[in-house]
Length: 268
Image (cartoon, rainbow, N blue to C red; front, top):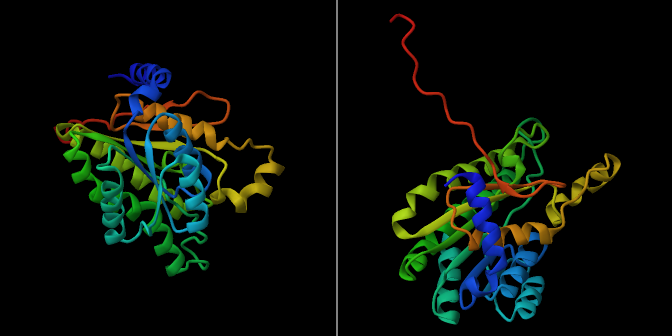
């Protein structure tokens, strides 16, 4: 399927997503605020039963109440916590069909004099380990349902160079690589794996950038735009795709260039 065809299929899915997600069970990590909150609300509106996971218990319970779902405290950087989250969702709703692996944090340091091991590990733990552990934990549950959908929140920082925050770019590039690789790998299980790659979107992760964004008159993408795109991805049929979301543009799968094939040896 081409990117254009996939985008059209996802758009068709948007028109019927209420029926498509009716009775489905979705886990949303980082669901207490920002993109996770908006996505939990959008999934519930589309008919899904939602398990909201976050370390922010107050915010998470509020979102769970708004969606008619459940809340579970979860540190996504801990493998056992991810397994317990999936077990909880199965106990509450009988299974899992969708996992939005959205939890993430800003890095807060670089690789020079400002490097800080604890901040580095915190960022890698949430932004990368959380996706790997979440995928590992939820995969058996999705297989038990005959398939399902995993969406990981990456970033435009996973598609471009980010000299001002190279460590954040590193873990988001890793998420993009996982999506492109696991998408085709999970086809035999009828499990789709995609990533969403928003630019500067409304969430706590851009709090330290708000003054700069305002000064440069850079628009902030509403969280609801990202959430609607996530529902489009889940109700579509693509896999291994990385959807970019940029202000003023229609979200769609990013078109990667193919790696050049081997050439003739210079001595041939």
